[in-house]
Length: 324
Picture 1 (spheres, rainbow, N blue to C red):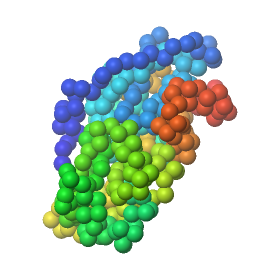
Picture 2 (cartoon, helix red, strand yellow):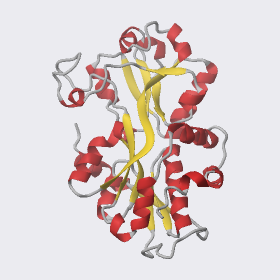
Picture 3 (tube, rainbow, N blue to C red):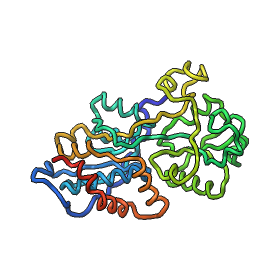
Picture 4 (cartoon, rainbow, N blue to C red):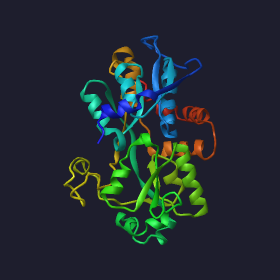
């Protein structure tokens, strides 16, 4: 298993790729805010939902009087920027993929945990319900041992193809396939958009597909399907090869499920205490964000427009994030 330091080293060459500044004068600010004239930098990762939550928070910070920048950053390598103070806030750290990195960074004093967002994370192998006729026994994972050919492509045959997320997302899918002796090969989608475009196309054609699907997202709302039921995740599954159905290998279980948290540069509270409290207070649910992702990814509406509309219609929600 790679350590956090090795993962960060692997990605640090391309961790930070550009800036976009929020324009427009703030609509509301207390006499004590902003406490500093420095700009707060929020990270943007490579999926629509994270861009939405980050822009929502950025808009509220702007309402409070802060100068805000959005900085494109690699999901794992952003921990380096948060530790150094080059980046200040990451709005979505998923327990399913980055719990170890967050806990290690917090323990080292490099990052501050700002608490849960209110969203519940699931990231797992998923298939459309019509596939069950072709692979009897689903959603039990053991059914996959007998029907890899159902999902085979010229690129993977005779093995089935599992359409994974971007390589930077992690997930241990290759290790899971080996540990559970599944006749599958992982083919990684290049981007979040490419992943769900292919899932949508397969669903429309009713062709077999098994892929990485997560929530919050529009796909579990729009499509009838199921997540594969692997042996339930435990810490021992990832850390102790003797645990589980394969006594010689780790990762012989499903992926963890759990919280999505906010994380920050340790100096955030001292530099911008009201912003620190507002970000800590941020909360939203899966259905709200999943619906908004659909507006962007399915309906083609500009992300800024979707954020603007939510802000205009939900002042009773976001105003509770702002400290009195």
